[in-house]
Amino acid sequence: MVEQELAPIGELQEADGTGAVRHARSSLPSTRLLSALPIGAGSKVLILGGPGSGKTTLGIQIAQAINGPFHELDFVGYEAGSGVERSLEDRLRDVAIIASQVRWVAEGSYIDWTAALAEAADGIILLDPPWRVARYRIVVRHAKASLRRSNKHPGLKRLWRFVQDCKGYYTGPNARRLQTEAWVEGFADKLVTCRTNREVERLVASIRSRA
Image 1 (cartoon, rainbow, N blue to C red):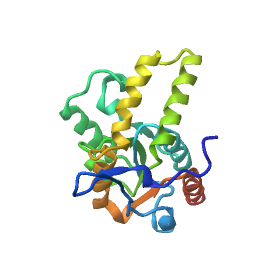
Image 2: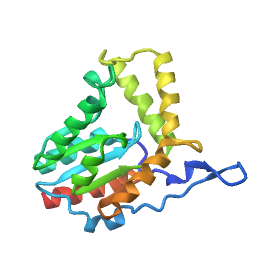
Image 3: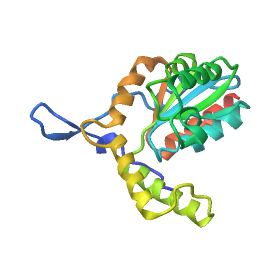
């Protein structure tokens, strides 16, 4: 199992007024507020987070718990999940269809065209592990897929390019992680943030107990 206790968001960095880089601390709610999050049978759940944060694994677990459909937003954003980017019109149309369903679980790292999902969701889960953990998961996932001969992007050069791209989500003054945090603050009343495996486990147990 990947590290039992993940580091807090302290590894995220942003520039201060002098141009220096400093650590940023998130003020988003953690699973201590889980009791107020109404996720159970018949719920609509949006899971957000960067690459390697565990979105797909958690999404499948929650979808099974609430007996609802599971949607990977990569397949809404791109042909076959990783091909040519689909038109904004097509993405918004499919997002509206998902949002209108009685119950669902959707996961992705997209905030530009998923507002309808956030608005319709009963709960929003932000997975926020530190970059070192996400990077480890990405590398392990790549290696396992290569061993199974199911890797759609084989080779160390492709892995290196992907890791460097993913790093842009987690670190630096323009990290997409910061943009995601700012965006979800508009839905703070139904948001929970998980930064450790232990918090994710408590979240899943709570949802299963309500389903």
